[in-house]
Length: 304
Image 1 (cartoon, one colour):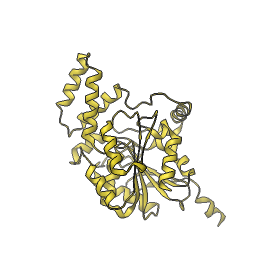
Image 2 (spheres, rainbow, N blue to C red):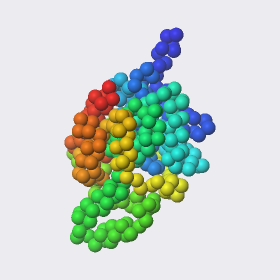
Image 3 (tube, rainbow, N blue to C red):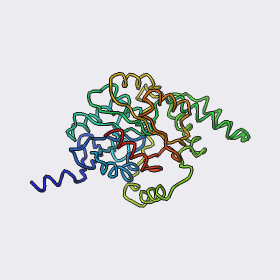
Image 4 (cartoon, one colour):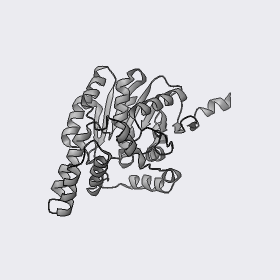
């Protein structure tokens, strides 16, 4: 009995044999469950898992992370990379960890998946938290390219590249990829003024096992754009509908996350409500590393 009791607090690692999904749970299963949905397509949960999952569990939550099928540590050459597939696998997480309902914590592209899942399966969701999450994709791409044109106004080569991007099919993997490459050149994903703690977290991650497992599948975005017709979404109306259903919505973003315009963030604040919205100073896209204490405090206060 003592062993069984103590095992509740031990980190549990489970691999789904049928689909080879990587997942891992942190904390006490009796605490409120939080499922983290990572970005992508082609990403993984290693950065969140390696820096933040246990610390969030220590705040009184049962934290579950997983890599979507065909991404990261969930290798599957036959993965379709569709939303339907993602939803089925997410429902499998509920089954594996014996969950009836859970709090969804969605980062970056994971916000699209988390929002659509919550809309389709509201009975499974206690709350939805968007953390640096996409919700109006084309508005993000337009914002990136607008600022890039201003920044590179005297650079003919870069302006030519931006023009090429604007002429691409906006529902294509190439368009998405090149928009984010431009955002990277503008340092939109970088913390403006790294703190000692953020540097320590990143260094610990880079030298540890999670960084070694930071597997990126370049085929995932190509498969997603080939197989999923819903690939450039504006989820504004979906989020409003979720709120009407009575499911609590929360949003926490980095004030210096350059891929979101001020208008986008104000629109989102109006949807979720001012008390459920937080902008964190000196913080960019990876807010759970940039300003981990503020991030964890927001999650603790809202989900408790």
